[in-house]
Length: 281
Image 1 (cartoon, rainbow, N blue to C red):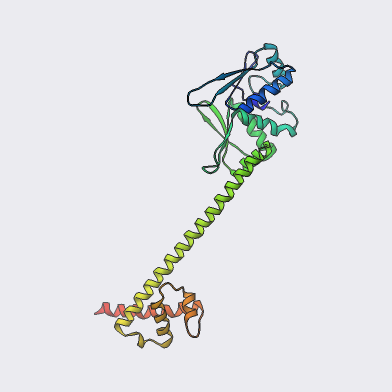
Image 2: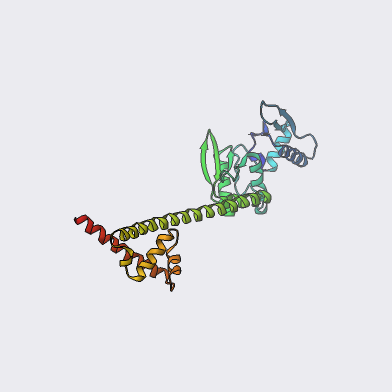
């Protein structure tokens, strides 16, 4: 039923399905013949195209067979999919699966998350959207492209849910694996960016502190500083890459990070006063 809803032609004069998929070709032939209780209900023609896969033209040639199929599935040219026309809810996944086989596609998840159904009519487009919303809580979007009605989904979780619902568990797992790898890479990148920013910030602060220490040393001399400030100034001058915590730990006796920060601020204040005095002269 799902495949027929998206057939290239669907009326009592012509029922035609075009596909490049051999499995879909075999599936369609097998099931139409099963429903018609015959072995020649479908005519298969192969269309060879340049630089492309073979296109299979599947048609139901006999008028009485077309009428039987249309009546069997309660289908007409409107391609409506009202609740009265649908089978029991437990068969909805198979209808959606048939629609996907006939007109659906999924992008490579490495590039982007995107699933779409290229529908032959707006009514069918709306029917599929309502079926997904009402029964699976999946809200697709719609766009018109080159006179075709497109139902599409970009949320990776919804794509995984639809594939699982249709029975394509291996495809779902593949997308989940790709999604997990992307999430891990993004977390690593964010962490590295954060670490690099912190390193740059710490180095910038250390360079300013070295500049202050050199200014004090060249004007009044480090020996003029109190012991606590002179010791930390010398440790900082010899270890530009030390964090405040490491500076404090290198003191004798060790002090806390906040203690090291307080002493470096005192040194900065002394250097700033020297600069102000120089500016007055």
